[in-house]
Length: 151
Image 1 (spheres, helix red, strand yellow):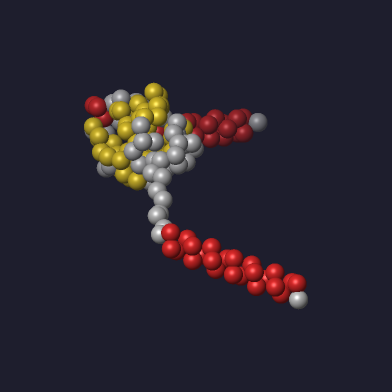
Image 2 (cartoon, helix red, strand yellow):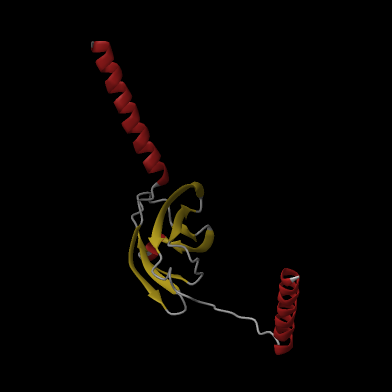
């Protein structure tokens, strides 16, 4: 019974020590998203903040939906993020990395307040002749179908 107890204690200590080492190895805490608001042209902004435990980290890189947003000093936290590359997604994925250690990153999501906005609406003008030609073609085909049905 004592052997099992010692083994259990050893496993728990190993887990706690390893978890502490892995956390300290990266040093980035869970990000906090606040002040999310939709602004004109279906763009939005939000405030991003988090604690950096590793004093060796002096800069971070931010990615929004896998696209690099920029590189910032940790001294600039909290950051005001302006997202003008509207994705149309309900949520956008935010990834924060330590540029010196690409394996060191944290992710979060921000709910897009502009997800139902209509933007960049474009249309193509067609000439009246083309529209009439298409209508003529449709009516010609319909007339032929009606003639075949009546015969």
